[in-house]
Image 1 (cartoon, rainbow, N blue to C red):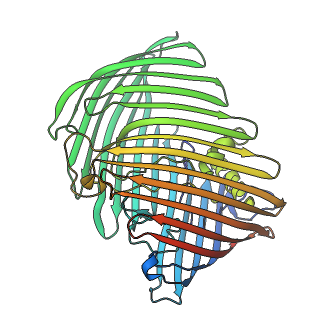
Image 2: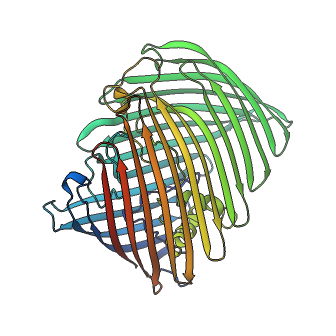
Image 3: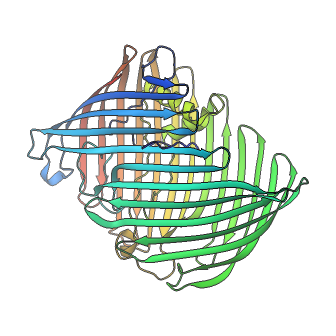
Length: 508
């Protein structure tokens, strides 16, 4: 599988260890290159953890040692017809001083773009496989990959999207695209879904500030434990660009969907959009689209300073299948955005960011959201504020987010959280302070909190976690991390957990 990094998307789930991979050039952790822009980076990691509550149950605490052996590989391509990144690891778990059987699980994350016909025909693909929380109302833990949580299951997702680009003489350009996305949850049909869509978008080739647009889209989603839904729309619009940095546009049309009542109904749709990019480091965008099943909108602000960045977004849209609650930024995504001015190429930037996170002992996945599986589309609103600051020795990242997922219309999904509650609300907060002690060692402290609420008083939980660690390099190809973790969970089967851990990573 050779797949891809697009739109700065995080290649999130590297390993349960949260250790960065990759290196950038000169004397750093080797890797194998078979041509310009192509890189293969094998690695192996060993983590030893002692926890005083392996069962995550204060009524039956089970102290134990956990050994995680995780061979893995990272592949990236930044040149030629295939561009993207792939990361895979096999995590073997050995439990000592407990009756819990040994286990293993896979972790895969990849994104890619293949250019089949130069400048005309592309295929985008993305794939992921890893532990995923099944219910927002169930038990939560900050150590999913080492501690077996009955609320988690292996979840696989694959998405393939072909795109055909072209032009109609000197009149217009067009893009015909399709998408097939399939999600499977191990040992459960809740969350299993298949989504297909086809869209055609065109835009005039007017030389002045005024131009026209037209689009047509149809989408179908089916859920093994829920219903099948469809929606389609056709719109036409005008765009006005008075300045190279400023664009306004509007559209209107008709759409048909069965999201609101379960039977297909036609209704109007209309929207407005504005985008302003006063500098290459700053962008402001806002759009609104009216629908009979619930309006959607996006408001975003992004700005990069020389050594820091800030991002804000407020979005509302229809969420299909698995719901990624909260929309929180991770350390990876924050610095991927901040390092854009250093390295515009997204694949090369991926290596640069991972090397920076490794050297500063920062978990690429820190502040990742929890999420839950669903058996029907839902209306999701997410708000997030995140920032990063990089000093000579100190690095600080912060994230705040909240989200709300609610049913659309009167339909009741066949299973999942939205069959028990008409809404799922989540709030997240996280702050990380990393300090470089020497050129090859650092310490970091992360404090995070997650609060989930449902329609009923019993559907609530809070997880608070503190992580502290020391991280160092062992030559050019090795690293070591030693740390401690404290978790407090209030909700169904509450628990407190204390743990200490040590991790060795070797890159070949």
